[in-house]
Amino acid sequence: MYDILYAIKWRLWRIKTSVFYKRVFGSIGKRSTICKPMYIQHPENIYMGEHVRVREFARLETEVEYNEQRFTPKIIIGDNVGFEQGLHMTCAESIIIENDVTVSAYVMIMDCTHDYMNINENVLEQKLTSDPTIIGEGSFIGFGSRIMGGVKLGKHCVVGTNSVVLKGEYPDYSVLVGSPAKVVKKYDAEKKKWVKENND
Image 1 (cartoon, one colour):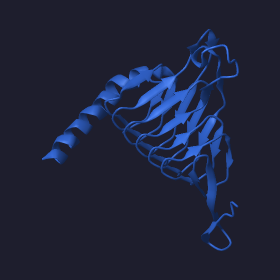
Image 2 (cartoon, rainbow, N blue to C red):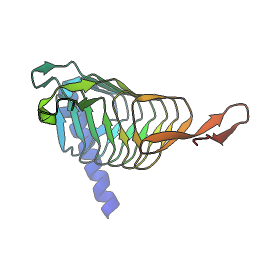
Image 3 (cartoon, helix red, strand yellow):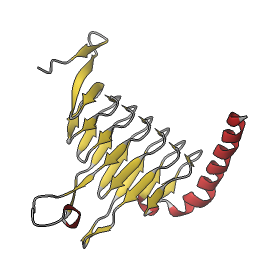
């Protein structure tokens, strides 16, 4: 019975996405569905491809102004991307999520952070700094992970549960775990298998 009720809700959310959200977002492709979000800020700066699924309680923010700073943010989401519940995404410059990415529940994806250098001023009153973030095609982001500003994940990267990925470039076919996250495995095309990295 629950499955039937949820299927009906899903259908209603998809209709709302195609009728309402499509008018206010930058663009939304066919068969995309946004379920009962918690908060959406400046949706005109969000561009979604086809068959994107955003489950309940997502917080999607594009910052156009902060403490007299001005930004031109853009979130670009490819085709066949799935976000589980509790997504928190904040963008002041650029977040790109390529095709076929899976994002587990309660994940945070950022391209910006608060400065803290002035010890005589509240952190929230200091400037916002930004650095573009990219999640490569076919990647998987584990439950509760944090993707910080300036992260550039290659294709088919796997981020382990509760990992914190800091600014940097991470090669295609990598497995990252920990806080801060480190590459612990890479796919070796010659050996045709995943090989452990030495992180002594």
